[in-house]
Length: 290
Image (cartoon, rainbow, N blue to C red; front, side, top):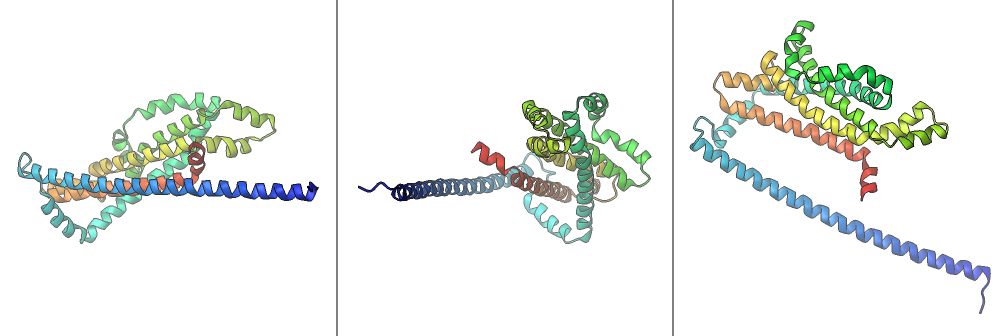
């Protein structure tokens, strides 16, 4: 029986090809099973969401006809909302609120993320900034309204500033906690291997802090919408918060509900965009935890 190097190499190639085919088949089986499970889960979530929405509308209608007689019924709200949505002034309100939220949120994130990472990484910076950070973090964003009106000449800037304060502290705090949660042995290993601060920041600090950063961004986006609505009710001339308050003053309750629903939809869309970005940049986490 021949046992030449060529024969052994041929047998090894056959075994290797069989192993690769087996692994590929197993991978395709697992991937197909997981895809089917995800489809079933999404279908179940859609059905559950529809049933929940129908139950909410029924409950709303019952309340409007019994214990809450001043509450407009779902049908009355729908009819009036269609009329309001046809008015260009409604879209002007949406634009102003969305612009204020995005400007305040993006500005807050651009400052808060580097500051939070530095606070979590550098003890000297943390000791210098934490007392003032904790002091101002305890101040509710709405409490800044009088001071912001005094500081800024234009009302638009004051509302953006209030939105900024709502998102800034929660984003910075989560970035700080993310930096502090990284295993210190990773930093020591990087220094021993001759890495410079820029490389440590890029390859260890930032990737390790991303889950906490995105958590802070999601929370900050929600708070930004809450604060901009409150600021528009107090000091705004346009926006969904101003629309809700003016509709209440004029006893147009369906428009109040429309403004609330619009705020909820816009907030959900903004959060969904953040989740999509997080899923893209945190795909390694899904693979690691799978």
